[in-house]
Image 1 (tube, rainbow, N blue to C red):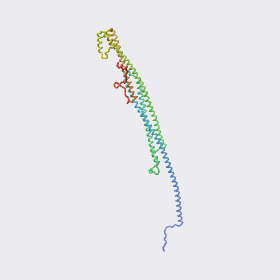
Image 2: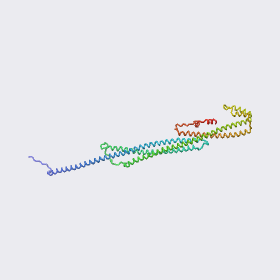
Image 3: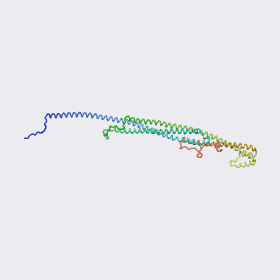
Image 4: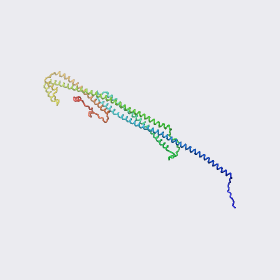
Length: 430
């Protein structure tokens, strides 16, 4: 008969078994309860963290958008300021160029005034006078030189202001580029999301970078650049007005002085022409008187020789006068006088000698006076030519230099003027 084998080991009692089952159930209940609590807490935490993360992300999205708007407003302000600065730089550059052209244009009046002064240094003797024309020419030189100094000062001020505007523009441009880069970066940040392929963990992303500024410092910097640019624009506007005023004033002063100089020069020319005409009239009368005196002396000499040589001398004189050339062979008063003298005229030798001496002295005095008159005519003619050259030179102030053609004779450098018939006859007599 077979025997029952018994498994060796500890044997538990039924109560132990029940106790163990209950213990396992209790532990399971406790673990499930703990797990439930953890699950509930996890759900709360998930909800809270999701909401917090969502709102944080939403708030930062809003902050980024607001920051983008703020930076964009400053960018637009800087854009407008840059446009204004560029427009002011162009306007000031044009005004500076106009001032430089006005400065360069003053060289011609200065050269003309100096040329006129140099020409008038060629006056001779009594005509070398410090007349109103010379005073006005010296004033004109002073006015032109003062105008050049004022314009040069304005050109220098405009150059310095252009440098300041360029400096302000560089600051604005640097700030503008920074705003553009910041806008691009913040727009990229605004476009990122959790599904973006280029997101990753970074090393110490919460560090404060070197050179960081506060929002107030950032705003103050842009405001300072804007205020600086606007101040330079205002200064440039005032300078442009001052430059334009200086150009107008110098042009007006120079024009007024030019008119005064030319008025004095025309008056001087009229005075010279009047004196010249008066001298020519005196020369003509003196020449006529000399001719008459010479004629009378010749007659006296004829009388004296005729009385000494009698009829033979008179016949010889008449025969000799038949050899006069061409149209000079005329039956003039001398010829009739000689014929009458042969037949009728008698006089004493002593009376003829005395009268001949008196006539010769008078003739010598007339020749001396004629020499003085002709010398003064030469001075006046030279002065008149020089002043007319001055007037001719000053025509360059009224017409473009390329179109200026002096109306002078290239041979003797005298003004081409049409003489009246009376003056032509005077020249023939001279």
